[in-house]
Image 1: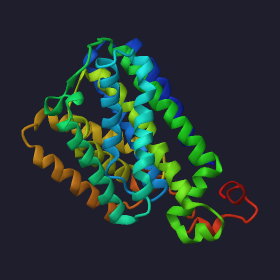
Image 2 (image 1 turned 90 degrees about the vertical axis):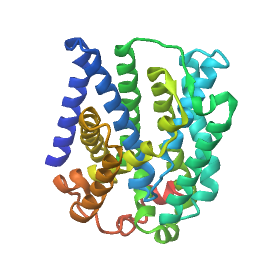
Image 3 (image 1 turned 45 degrees about the horizontal axis):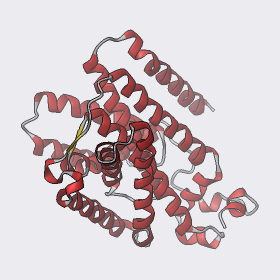
Length: 327
């Protein structure tokens, strides 16, 4: 109970602070930094749906982000759609690609799934590099709309809604327990009457849709996108580090990991921007250290859950909602 109260108190305090920051701070640079930090929190928790709760490491997460960005860019600049009309289609495009790609890739497990999703990301990046409608390697410039406070609240609202929805689905509703059952013992989940293929597909789409929305907001906010910045490996790589370091299979863990890793990235690029390779080496080392010394991540180490290492399947009563709804 103390752990639950701590999490709730922390969430309320952070939310209240973030809501009032634009009113008490008239610094565009700081507001821009906070906007990007909030975006990374959203990307991390969306990534954790398929990685932490379901147990499938998705190295193509950045592809959904880029798809959302390019969908918004094309609809706004080529079709002259208003941003507010185009925005949902960024998430929809990411969800559709997740649905199509998930049919073959979700049949794979472990490293095979990770490699397949990485290949998907590279394929989409190559398409963007060679298609005229995307601007090719030169990228695409969007119409500038200079309102940092609006984008701050827009990003905050998108991530807040995502967090609330995922909290309900993964921590309160039976859906989260079903995913954990698959993560711990997929064959055992089948024996209990669950449909792992259907559940994994739902988790994949649930991870992709908000990622596409955040990509669309980012594109309009940053006003310029290109294949290397929105479809490159860096988005996926940093999401992996944030989630592993913060704590997989939780929502607070990836959020904490996102804040800490983004803070480190900001300081590093401010003073050591010429050492790009060193930054990647540090990210890789951080994953290794996390896996070896804090396998449950920072949040899981500070607030351990009971029976984390035990099979969730064994704890599901036969008359539970999982059996009734999972068929």
